[in-house]
Length: 66
Image 1 (cartoon, rainbow, N blue to C red):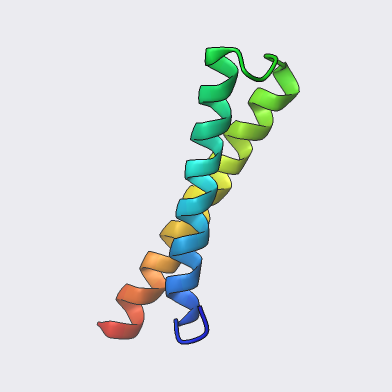
Image 2: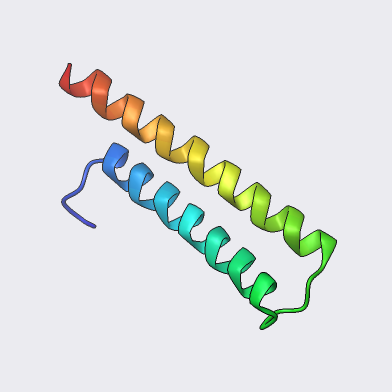
């Protein structure tokens, strides 16, 4: 990740956060992890934050190349 711009890093981190939250929610639904309200809110918050970070990175890419 040394040669990537900060915008690309933001998109990668945001996407990783969203994937991690989906995996966490899936593991709760399947029953591997015990269902908990706090854990559900955490998965939602990580997903929302990942979306925000990713969109911010995409807008930065658009602005720097446009």
